[in-house]
Image (cartoon, rainbow, N blue to C red; front, side, top):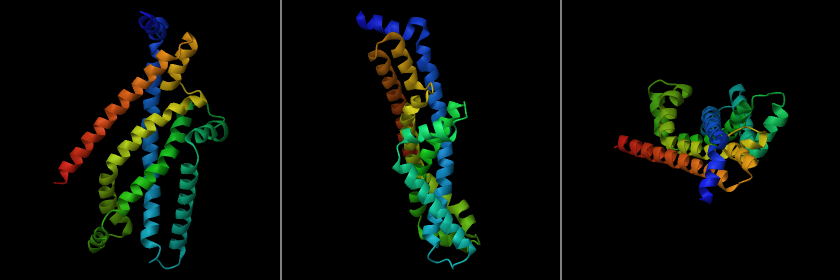
Length: 237
């Protein structure tokens, strides 16, 4: 009976379950758009870095090589900083320093988590590009494609297919990482549970509720990733 009373007090009284429901919507929105931003940044960085690794030794010194070296340097600095600092610190810098004048906390969170995710997506995608057999590049050249066309029409589609399961797993990781968005007072799922706790002075029910929702989401998306991997394996036969 005590658990029933606590459940009613935490979730049903004053419709407090809406804090979790609304927070879940914010969490999914931030995660979805942050993943899109992360993929966009990651693909661009991966192409720059893989192009440098594959062609820098054979390119003659000139303006084109200087631009490529400079872009590769910028990408390496970005990867080092983003992967070497905690996402919570990056989120707070984005909120309190870079976008201190912004009142759109969802946008701040999307940018912070998207930029963070981009560093990891870049390495995932770069490994996918580097895993493509060198003969594919030669095949593209034999068809009359230049390097950019070869990357666009032959290499990138194959690499994307190879790393798609890893990208889906990055989505799951990012979903859990957004739980720290409450540090900038964003009313996400975790913050919703914290609001309930502050109203009822009962930590057990809201925290367990938040944990169960995250667990269900992760299990669902993990199932989708497994189904996707089986579909990709069957398409290769």
